[in-house]
Length: 105
Image (cartoon, rainbow, N blue to C red; front, side, top):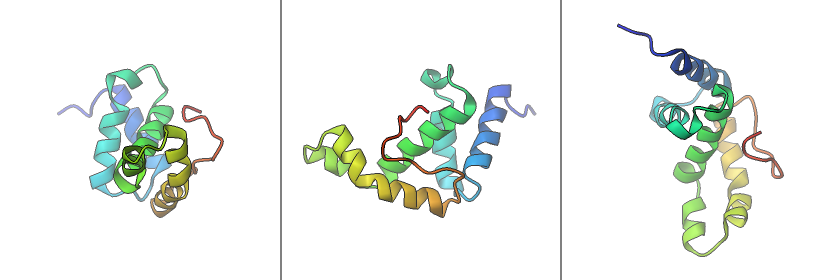
């Protein structure tokens, strides 16, 4: 049985390093998103970070409801920043989302 491609292994290592306490039910969608074709040009650590922030934003915050209410993307992101960072802290993340951070950095 194969242990996966080098990129899959690198994504797994980056996920474990970034989120030591992430539940399996959240880690697998994050892993899948980080492996998406549009993420292939990014370093594994950046792909995992972007996938993590997007997953938390859409699954664990009111971001989508705010967007449905008419808030623009930046405003909705501002209002859920604390909730995103609370989830990252719960998962013992090695970094948090900054208010003025470019997401790909």
